Image (cartoon, rainbow, N blue to C red; front, side, top):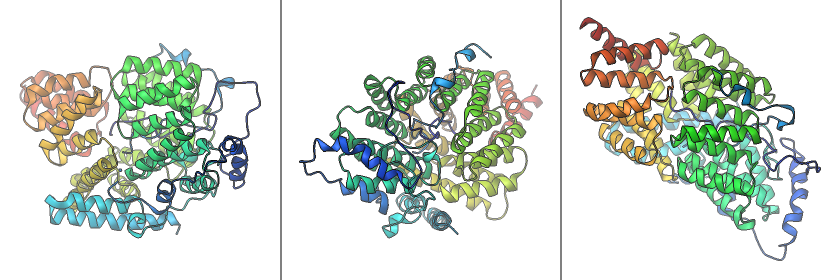
Length: 568
């Protein structure tokens, strides 16, 4: 699977100050009367500046309702603050683990399917020109036609999903009512344009909308909304934490760290900033610092958002036992459906990485019981089905995912399943998926997203190999994580530069992270450099760990290992 990030967790509304005995202002979430309550709660903020004529910038508000232009917009690194687990008073932290081993949506989906097919057809007819055309068509796909027709959002179920008081209720960001919540915030801000808290919430909601819908054109809107919040209330920690989340979503991890530190200077208990700080350090490859940041976050704001990040830091260091224990604890503490779906999916991904497909499918089933439309669980279930040999179910599942939100990870996975199946027309279908990865990359870069890692991983196997190397080198220059090391190693290999690739392949596996793709890449590179003994060791380790890690890669690993065994 692509690099796993920890940004899919929904927001929780108590992301504010240190625990206090003072009564807190009432903030509500997904009920229809909440917008009015939120309006009252923010009137005091705006009263001091009533004399100033200050209408909300329509470029920020209206664009969210009518869709954005095709040239403006990554999703995998998304919002870094989260779920609705309660405050820490009734739950201890993780110190004990430290050493242990016919709806509107359906209509929009149909438009996306049609747009994707047109994009793919164009890509096949003239590959050299497909980037610009596919980017426009993909923009239509990810916004359900809003860009083309100038209006309409995905229809949500909750009319006031996001409180007008500038706080997101538990689980709102992971549910289908996010669009309705954004509309509610926009309406509120037209009436109360000086509500800096709601501007920051709107910015974060745009970030999450971009992430969950695969629509990077929302990021410039998020940037404007967060900037507006800071203009109204300079230095407010909500907006600073929002800027950190936006930077992380755009893969600007130094920027994310900078903004998170600024937010924490204002409010050391800001959960979103604490979580984004962990994410940024992880993505920069600063794993020791990330572990310390996770401990700090656990001390200050224990809960589902922190627990899941704590687990991922442990997994990256090879401590699968602790990662699993922490995630199970997080699942036990989760109550909101969105939290259950998120944590169960994380457990499924962890199990899949270890080749435990039956266990993974059980976790994905629990996630989908909580939220039957949760895309990471749908994608994870399809991958586990493919690894278990149920290719038909896997193809159907991934087709469902990419028809709604065509992101690079599931697009590549579906393309490889088509290639592996090899039926009539499957080669063309696979090429469609890979063309759409390029189109998504173009759209993402237009919105200020650094998409080099996504581009390098996809292009190395299914695109322009020279472009893969350029992208991988550019990303390595920015950050030294295990994922960027692996991407650079593989890009060098496919360009015939195995001696240069080997140190990066070794670095990718140096932390103890149990990743079959990394082991496979290292084994192939070692074989190419003539070290057959090491190649056998790592190819076997990849297949022993996760024999279905990739439809094509696993097959190639078995073939290479068989050849090596025959040479002994």
